[in-house]
Length: 204
Image (tube, rainbow, N blue to C red; front, side, top):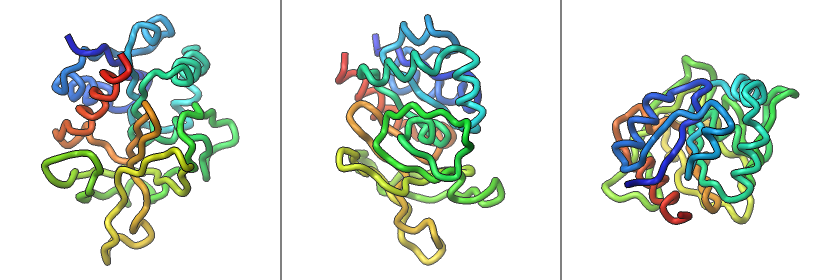
């Protein structure tokens, strides 16, 4: 049996992440309560709206337990808003936004612009075989600055149409914590989820 991986089920693409994790060999379950968090081997923080998610984490009494478990080594993967929550510092965030301080990075919230500026593109992703990853960005962040212990896995290609996004960091790993600015759960490509399931296996 595969590892038990929870998906924070307060907002966002919960069902899609659960399905991708199951296909990648995990036993996936939604997490809404501290006792559900205590029963998982890894956690996925889906996309959504990061300030709303941080408020909901507090309302559901999950913020401190989640922060503590990640600090104790619980593998975590955040996509889009999940990347923002995992970051040490957020630019353009709201003053009441709470962070999980799991990644030594500075991220820029809504870096690619509003919903109309969402886009798709192919990325070279370090450590994944079988060619580029097709990435869907929806009001996505990017990493402005990464600490020495952070592994950069993907950047936006430096093409003529990329504009300010060219060469921006959009996928990172620091120990057992993984984050992408894009939404792999929306494309049917399970390689990022398989990578995370493998990371969880490494810690068990």
